[in-house]
Structures are given as C-alpha cells and as structure tokens.
Image (cartoon, rainbow over all chains, first blue to last red; front, side, top):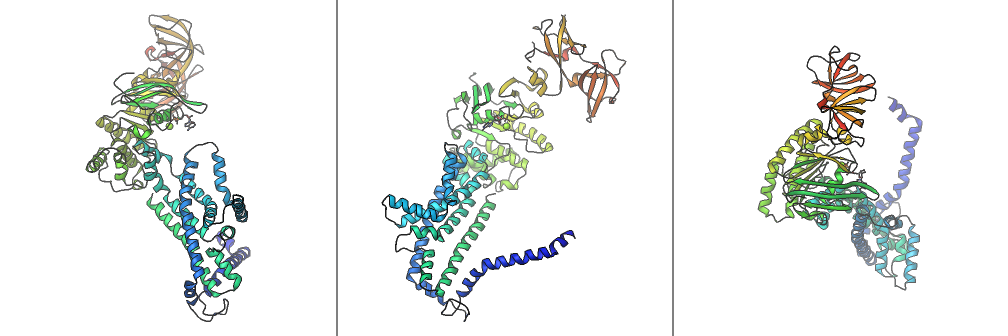
Length: 269
Length: 360
Ligand SMILES: Nc1ncnc2c1ncn2[C@@H]1O[C@H](COP(=O)(O)OP(=O)(O)O)[C@@H](O)[C@H]1O
Ligand SMILES: [Mg+2]
C-alpha cells in the first residue's frame, strides 16, 4: 500500500513524463533517419510519399560508398585482430605477473580512452610529421588500435581477475606447461570477455569519425567520413539509407557480442 | 636424510619479502606415510605445501621427492598430486576431461586413459559421472573428483590443503574416513594440511605441529597429544590447564610443585628436574577428576557447567585458581555452586621448564 502512494503522486507522474520526453529527444532523430530511408520521395525529408527500397539500391551502386565501406571494414578487422592479441597479452601481464613499473604501463595503456580524441588525432599527426612519415592507411590503423586497445585491456583484465589462479595452478601441477595451461584453461575461461571486446573494438573503429578525419590519407574515405562529405554536397535520401545501415552494424554487433559472450560464459560454467 | 624417504625437506626457509613464513623446516616422510601439518591459521602450512608443489620458491634449503631433488625444477615436471580447499575443478571441462587432464601430458595411450579415468572414479565411489560438469556436482562430490584427478597421475606424493574445510560437519567426518581408506588402498605418500586437531588426530600416521613458521613437534597422534614437547603443543591440542609454580621438593620419583596460590600439586618427577626450579604444570582437563566433597584432597567449587551430552565441561575454582575439567557423565552432573573434591594423579602432570619445553 505504501508503495502505491509513493508511485502515484504528482512528483512521480512528473518524473515519468520527463523520462519519456528525454527518450523521445534521444531516439526521435534515429527513428526519423530509419523511417525516411524507406521514403519514395526525391527529397530527404517529410512528407512521406510511399514505401521504397530505392535508396538502398542506389547505395549499392555508389562506387565511393562501396569503397568507403571496404576501407572501414578492412581497418576495423585489422584493428580488432591486433587489439585482441595485444590486449590479451597486456591484460595477462598486468593481472598475473609482477614487474617493475606495472602501474605506469597500466596507466599508459588506458590513457587513450581518457584523452579527448581531437587531442589524440592532432598528436599522432604531429608525431608523423616530425618523423617525416607519409600519411598512409597504416597510420589510420595504428590510430584506431591506440583508441580501442584500452577497452580490450579493461574488459579482459576484469574477467581475468575473476578467473581464479588455482585453476592454472592445478593445471600446472598436473603436468601442463605455461603455454598448455593458457590454451587449455585460461583462454577458454576468458573467451566471453575476448568475444565481447573484439566486437566492441570493431564498433569503435567502424564508426569513429573525429580521429579518422585527422589520420586518413588524402582521398581515402571511411564510412563516417564519407557520410560527412556527402552531407556537404546535399542531403540526399541515400544518406538516410546509409545511416540506417550504420545503425544496424553498430548496434547489432555489440548486441550480438553480448549475447554470444553470455552464451559462452554459461557454457564455461 | 634417509635413503628411503619419499619426501625430504632440509632446512627449508621461505620469506615473502621481509616476512619469514617458514623458518628452517626439516622433515623426512616415509613412503606411504600419511603426515599432517597441523597449526593455527597463518603458521606456514600452505606455504610448505606450495614449496613442495613448486608454486612458490623457497628462499633457502632443499627439497627431495622420491629421491630426486625437485626444488629447482618447474612445477609441471614434478609429478605431484595437489588437492585444493575449493577443489579447483576446471569449470569448462567435463568430469572425464578433468580427470584425464594430467594423463594427457604423460605417455599414456588413448585407450588406457579412459580405463584409468573409470578406475579412478570407482576408487572415489563416483562411477558413471564422466559426462557431467563440475557445476552439476555437490561439494563433497567435487572434492572426490579433485582427489581422483590428483591420484590418477600416480604422483610421488599427494598434497592436500585443508581439503575438507569447505564441507559441512557431517560430510566432513564421512569424507575423513573415506579419504583415509582411499589413501591406504593406493598406498600413496600423503601430506595433509589442516588447522583442525580432530582431523589431524583421526587420520595421521604422524602429526607435524607448527607455530609461526617453526616445527614445534613431530610425532604420532598419541605422542603429540599425550606427551606435548612444548607449551604451544600442550595448549593447542585438547583442553589443558597450564599452572605456573615452583618445585619445593623431589623425592622417590615424585616432585611437589607449589602453585601460585599456595596449593601443592604432586607430579611424576622427570630426571632432569631440579629442586626450586620454576616450572609450568600441565594437566589435561580430562585428568582433573571431580568427586564428592567428603572425599579427601583439595576442595573446589563449581563455577560453571556445560552439558555436552555424553560428557560435561566444568570450570572449578580451587582457592583462587580456576581449573578446567571434562568428565564423562556416569552418575551425576555437578551443578554451579556445588562443592567438590579435586583429584589429579601424579602421572597425569607434565612439567615444562621456563622456556616452555617439557622436562624429561
Ligand atoms: N603471497 C604472499 N605474500 C605475502 N605473505 C604471504 C603470502 N602468502 C602467505 N603469506 C603469509 O605467510 C604466512 C603463512 O601463510 P600460509 O602458509 O598460507 O599459512 P597457513 O596455511 O598455515 O594458514 C601468513 O602470515 C600469510 O599472511
Ligand atoms: Mg592455508
């Protein structure tokens, strides 16, 4: 009864209304983009004139969009692979071993997640200038690795702390060497965290725009920068279709990852 | 060092930084023997076990297992069976894969592996659970699987670190018996760690009583219980009265000890006892016999009574000295405030010197 009165008063109503308004403010633009991507009209705005997949078809024929997609995909895949290998090794070292300067290494690995992206973007660019190196696609990959590595380290570290050391000790006492112990025991037990962090890294790389603007070689576009440059010319309804696809990838992948991680975690128990 | 020793520790010392957890421990264990490291929490028992297993590196001394020096070789080449307090079964592997794990790294044929796993499961009385996951088993079952996993590799020595302490009381007692039976059957040299004296007394061939990183006494359960070598052992095992006093006379194998409040206690005199020596008399609570007040000897009054079913524990005031007494209940339980007579046989009194060591 007392619960009833506390959730039916005027104050509570106001909170409910306000919450709904906030959600509308946050999600309405996304909904608009998705809805308009199926609009038959020539113009990228309301009113709707009918349902059509026309803009998706057009997108598939747009050479520069396809090229940007390929670039983004390639960068994201390389970044994911490199980050997971480096991230697992770093997390292992930080959780399982003692070495001088451990705190410093930890701080430096995590730092890129705390520094504003613009600063990182300019910084890395200046460094490359200073070293008289050309701006290649590898610079972009390197930058994305720097941006995403902290998340792998953090996620894997958290899981590794939860994996009791006695499992590894038991394996070693039974005759497995360090590598066999890692392969048979540690790796399967941290697999949920690895899957989750790889998908996270993929998403971070795939939809990064701020830093990518600094790092991409001239003439090369990633998906987000391609959208930006398309916007400079006109608001074509194609952009709505592209935006919808981006949303599907960047929301769908983490959801998929989360689900997979939970599934793996359950079967690892 | 004896040639036949299955495990031989020589002057093993281990420091964690400044803190010395194990001090100059020497111990020789025969093949097939069941030896228990007993002592309060933090006295270094686990550290000794982990040194033998190779999970920590001693800062000094040598360790031999099965006639081979092992303290300088890596863990996975030591052939040692290890059972942890919380089982440490691999959660993502089936029972079969858990038990077969150690066999994979030995030259055992595929066909042999499954036969050995089956036999190990029969030995711990859990046949047919090969396909289950550890999470599907109860605590007691998991501990048996852990035991099977350690035994199946036919280790030179089996190390058990408080393996029963995570189980509830009934199961613990059952597992105690069973563990002992399995150990006998296999004939495996075993080092068992516990802080539970009942466990140690019930299971061991020999008990190593430890305190603060040092060995206090090594002996059979009966020896350490009945003839404690030091003040620590006497107070750690069982309930004892520790009564400080001074020797006032030695004659015909009997010594008279004047206790603090002026009481005289007669003790069997050890050969090395000197007249006028400061001593501590030790009397087990079970050896303080209470009787009706009209029986001769010193008198006392019951301060408190704890009824324990088959027996009762009393605190008795003997003219300013509080004594602990435990007696099986034959006819009656003494109530608080009742007067009693107190009898202590000279043979039941042990004497410690000023340093806390037993006089011989
Ligand atoms: N890794 C460690 N670092 C520092 N001190 C430790 C470490 N492991 C154990 N100790 C200390 O060493 C002492 C002995 O520990 P341990 O062998 O675990 O005792 P027990 O098993 O008898 O309870 C304890 O005081 C404990 O705090
Ligand atoms: Mg311990």
